[in-house]
Every structure is written in C-alpha cells, then in structure tokens.
Image (tube, rainbow, N blue to C red):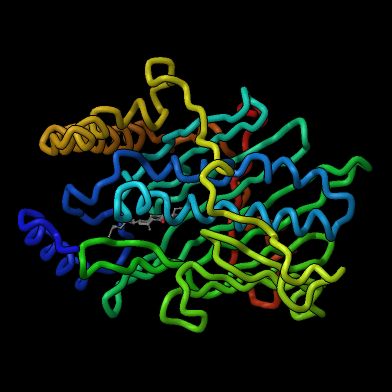
Length: 375
Ligand code: HCR
C-alpha cells in the first residue's frame, strides 16, 4: 500500500537522513506518523505478558523440563516484543527515548507478578528491568541497549545486554539461565511500512549445562517463511542435541527431529493466540510518581494520540530541556545522578561465567540489580 501523499515527502527526507546516519536511533527525528505514544521503558513488560508460561517454569520437575519451559517462555515473548506495534497500527513505530531515571512500574494478577523498570543510562540509552513472581521463586533481571546501523535498504539493530533468569528450587538451590538477545532488522522502509524481522542467533545458557540455540530466519531466506526459528537444545554448546524445535515465533512451534521421548511432530507451543499474552496493569497516571513513564510523557503521548503534533513536540522539548537543566544543576553541585531502583554490578561475574559456557568470547557486560529497598 502506498503512503498518503502528505506523508510521502517527510518519509522521503527521513530515509535520506537515515542513509547518512550512524549512532543510536534515539537521536533521530522521525516523521510524526511513525511516532509511538509510549516510551521504550514500557517494552520490558513484553517479558511478563506470557505470565502463565513464566510461572510454569517453577513446575518443571527436572533441570531438562525447566530448561524447555524457560525456552518456551522466551520464545512466547517474541511476538509481543517484535510484532505488536505492526499488528496494531500497520507499522513499527518509534518509541520515546527515555530520560535518565525514568521508571515503568507494573504488575499482573494483583501483584503476583511484578515488574520494575528504570532507565539506568541516557547516553548510551540503557534500560534495566526486574520481573518477579515471588510465589513461584522466579526472577528475570536484565538490561537492554541498542546499537543501530543503516545499510542496503534496512536498519540493523544489535541488542546489547542480556538477561539472567533465576529459579529458586525446593532444595534451596538457585538455577540460573543466561538469555542473550537476538539481532533485528527493520524492513519495509521503502514502502513506509517498517516492520521487524529477527536474524542470526540467540542463546539460553543454563547453569546446569543445557544450551538452547535459537536460529532466526525470515521470508526469502532458507525457510521462506517470515518470523521463523529453528531451536536446538543441546547438552552444552556444541554437545549432542536432545531436542529440536521449529516453527514461527508468531505461530506454532513443533518438536522436530531429533527429539527425546519420541516427541517429533507434537506442538511445543502456539504463539498465535493473543489470549496467551496479558497486558500489564499500571496505576492510573494520577497515582504515579513523577518519574513514572506514562505520567512524565502524558502531554507528549496525548498530542500524538490526538494528532496534535505541535503540542506533542512542545511538550517533548519541555521535558528534554528540563532534563538537560537537571544534569547541569547536578554538575554545578558536584553531584552525579543516583539511580533510584537499581544498583550497577560492573563487569558482572555471573554473566561472565555463564557466557563462557557459550563458546564465544563474551564482551565485558554490566548488570543492574534491583535495590532491596525497591523490591
Ligand atoms: C529498534 C526499536 C527500538 C528498540 C526495540 C527493542 C529492541 C527494545 C527492547 C525490547 O525488548 C525489544 C525491542 C523491540 C522493538 O522491535 C525495537 C524497536 C523497533 C523500532 C525501534 C526504532 C528505534 C525505531 C526506528 C524508527 C522507524 C524507522 C520505525
């Protein structure tokens, strides 16, 4: 479908600005029709949407069962993370670039599953999150930044960061799973209908030694089907394959060959029903604290939703100027900004230990851990 004439020229100049662009996409001025009325700090809620799959991880009787359940939960989050905006509005959208210290607080099932998110760095933009089901003893804590590059008609986005999922076992021991994040491409730029496709490989490495290797492919590649994946569960990176799972992360995934216990052909899970993903509950804006995303960005979001882009852009400038002033004032007082919800764990040894098991040389990575006062 062609773009409406009024949007054609702004989209054309946006594409031109992309071609000469390097750095992070957050600094880019996008045409108003491509703006999302929410901030990037809301995105970690996608991890909690398949809340029943998240809770079910603790029900696995063996390490192998739990590993498959972690893999199923991870795969089941992808459809929300990467296709929700396109599905709902016809194209991927550009979310707000969060301000330092911005928070997104939410929950599911009356507080059974709780999410804390904080923007822990502005340059480069890094978002940290903590998702916890206390009753089940499961915590997923991670951080995410994006490195973007523009080439041959598409934007490539490398997700920098990782997640650590911890399950407290009845024995009192804790099992940990390192989750690495897939690369993505933004396609459809030339038609003005950008959408996301995942590429290359991401991993789930468990402390008990099992590894899931998830290979992504899209239309026009090997499988020819968009949003496809082929996942193997091996005992250790490069070890014998216990399970193969293939399908699409937006639809059905089935056990393929080889699979233990003769499971070939059985359905592993089906991502196609929206009923399996529950939206996060967030307090009404009037009850939120001043750092909470929807309260802080309300005037901008309202402007975008109602098509009043002038007032949206005025409100956005006001917010950004106030933030710049805050940093200047801190500097003048000789202070540095203090995070409210998370503590930084530089060069995280736990990440390193698990990452070493995946036979690539891990770069140094920091983690952010929820302060006990915030939990
Ligand atoms: C790249 C992207 C911002 C980052 C978004 C991330 C990587 C954020 C973390 C989530 O867990 C997963 C995720 C999903 C999104 O698909 C991804 C966004 C897609 C587009 C957006 C750009 C900054 C927007 C570019 C502007 C146009 C061309 C659409």
